[in-house]
Length: 385
Image (tube, rainbow, N blue to C red; front, side, top):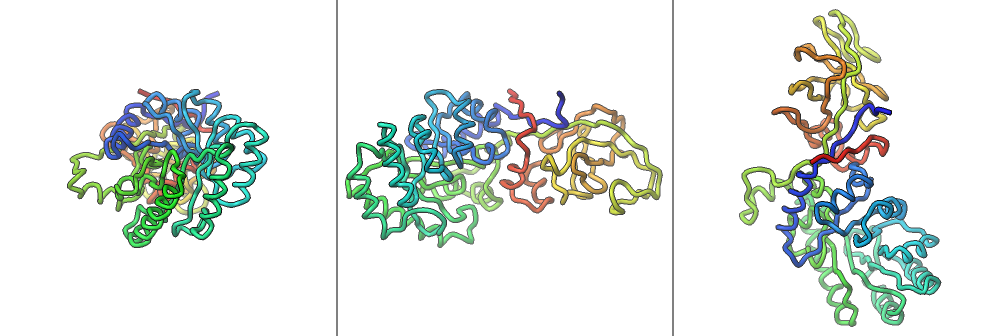
């Protein structure tokens, strides 16, 4: 069966992004590819083997369901880390499959010990500490008991990591908050080392922190959005552009994804007619409209009605009328020679023109992250050179 659209993943773009990130962090820091949110819309089943092919062997997911999907396609020597949801009933499964996971409360800590005993195999845990995000993690006043528990059960609990998460490192507005979090994490790190609990990794940095706060890289960084060729924010990109350490003439990150569809039909509409649902678009001259089988069901936001653009024959063409559930209408009056079956680029490059996820998501009033993960699992992902 032929889908109405498909997503291409560029191997060369991913190699370039990984090379850039590894150059920034240096050889002594472990690079983890965050593949939560269906690999930020790129598709876990397609992206993970591609990343392995490009030299990565560490992956982080949000929950046990994503870990199960990743487990089915990863190589035996690649490692998985669950950063969020894993039910206590699934701990045995994680332990048996050598999957590490975050522990951020006493219930999960105790359950991990019980699961390790049942499996007769150590649980690989990352102790998440609260440094000012106020979401998940052990508070400082709990750490003495946590460390004592880990010391007392070394045989059953392997301390893979001690970690935290920063509250918005992509924005300068959060600068002082990030500074406070860094200081708390350094202090907590010293407490673990002084207690004789040296984990395999201390880790705190996401893409934004990795790129803008070099002193947060520790032993390991967790890069998500940058891995796929997108900046965490415009501020992050400007910061890097102006940095003496990393001055560049062209963007070092390259978008891995291209989203394509095709024209399924053409309609020639006289002047003075409304197009599509409602009365939001009225032709003022005879207009040729191309119908493309993509709509808000596929992640093409309804907010792009009469605002979005696509590429066809190397030119930009506007979306006219309301975005439908499974269809958009494109004004191709200024694009000669359009026929049914012609390629349409929704995100990506065609000829000399490009539609970035940033421009796409700005018009739809989403951040990059939200737009990407709205792309449904059902859209086929195709790996390209």
